[in-house]
Image 1 (cartoon, rainbow, N blue to C red):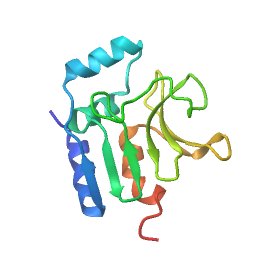
Image 2: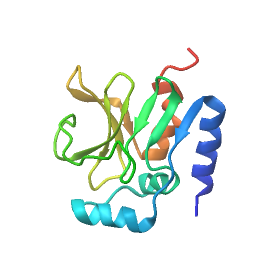
Image 3: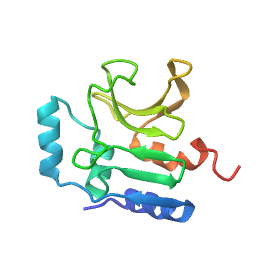
Image 4: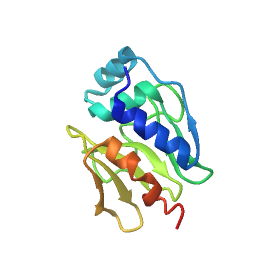
Length: 141
């Protein structure tokens, strides 16, 4: 069941721009992915995957999210992450990866050019990140 918080986020996204949401996955698929990769995905990202397993927001140039069943797939060993503490779950249109920190709810953006995660690009959880996408992408400026 979808939380009220996620419903509000989806409604907001749909009002702000063109989105492409892929079919969500089942709990069993998330469990299998976690077991196979010896990790636990953050709760709000798990809820997002149940709604949309990958997809794109703010087309044509926004952010692409990776999935566990739909391509592009999350690669827990993706080389574009700063270190093994992170998993790449998507990318901004400029190529900067969107990360979740293992054993945490934290979502951040890895500034590849600077080689670091900026303090103002760290979010408490996946929903906080998605809520701020409009500003992150500089849409409407």
